[in-house]
Structures are given as C-alpha cells and as structure tokens.
Image (cartoon, rainbow, N blue to C red):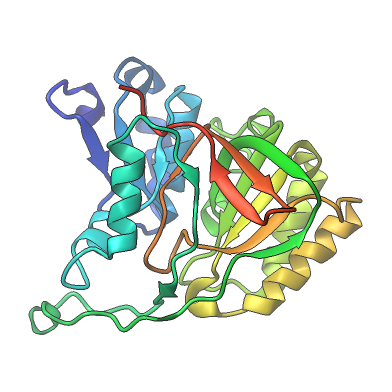
Length: 271
C-alpha cells in the first residue's frame, strides 16, 4: 500500500514467490490501487496480488521477479530482457510472441560461491497447438494454478472476469500430481469458467515434469465439458522455467490455430 500510494515510485516488482500472499487480503485497500496506477510485475504466488490489481481496475504483468530472474544466473537472459523492454517500456502493440529457442528449469542456490555461475540451457520444443480451429481472441487472465486454488471463493474472485478471456495457466516447482490438476480443471468446468473462455495457453511444466500427463488431463477435461474444439496452446514460455515472456492482464490476445501463432494485439502500457 505504501508503494502504490507513493507518487515517487513508478513501478513495483515482486521479490520472489512463496505461499503467503493470500494473507494480505484483509490489509489491502483496492481504492489505493485504483487511484495510483503503476507497473506491477511478478509471478507464482504474486498471482494473488495480480487479482487484487484486477479487482482494483489495474492491468498488471505476469513476469519476472527480482530474485528468480533479475538477480541470478549472472545476468538476465536476453529473451527475458527483450520481453520486459517490449512490454513495459513501449506503448506499441506487442504483436506475435515467439517461443524461446532455449530453456532451463535448473535452480542455482543463491550463495556467494555461485555468483558467477550461469545456468546451462537446453533446446526448447515449439509451441504445441493441441486443439481448435480458426482464430480466438480474448483478454488475458490467469496465473499459477496452485495459487489460484487459494483465491477461489475470496472477495477478489469473480467468475465474470473470465468472460471471453484467453486463460493462461502454469504450474510451480511443487509439480502437482496430474490428478490434482484434473480436479482443479473440473472445478473450473463446474463453475462455468471453461465455457466462458475463448482459449487457453499453458506454460511449460516446471523442469518438464508431467509434460505429457498434463496435456492428457487438460484435453480429457475439456472433452468432458464439450470443449474439444476450444483453442489450446501448450508449452508456452512463461512461468517457472526460464527465460520468460511478460503477460499483461486484461490485454487483448489472439490464438491463430491455422497459422499456429500467438499474438498480443494491444500494448502493455500507455504513453
């Protein structure tokens, strides 16, 4: 609240994730966020704060945190840096989002001995267009699945947020069992959320654990709810692996199943 209300602060970056942000709810004044719009960026547990911003009418950014991207690996990955600059420091439409050609899920301990140690990268597979035809457009909303489970039913949860949305999901270093992911997805279906959305983009599972299993349960649940033609892109470059893109909440995005492209067709910030 101090950071949002201070006019000298132009942007706020989450330090790291965790599992505590839900405890902030009783202490957040949404009017402070509403009256003091500024850049807010982070991911993972920060999903809670993004939904606070959403409730307060502010578009925030699902992207890099200080410790996990800016402060490790010797320097920020070029791909991550390009997307931060493209999203936060330009008022041009973001356009087509290309997958990073390389990725890493390795974690290096934050110790003095590791200050000059870089993470090894490996070749990345491309985006997988699992289902759907034609084009689908919608505003972006989503986050870390495990964290969203803590949000359901709270004062900042509103199923109307998901009307005509492109829903983005990713899973954390907890690497939840595929059966849990199946239960969570069925809950979205039971709430009517899956029928409200226009498409789904799914981030690469952490260290590619359960890579194929998550795909199976996702398509299975969508089929259960009569949504076998809903556009879905898998293995997107956001979330708990590196490098990563930056997703602006509420901004219009497009899935083109014929050209197999994903684009953000509005700007992330305004001049």
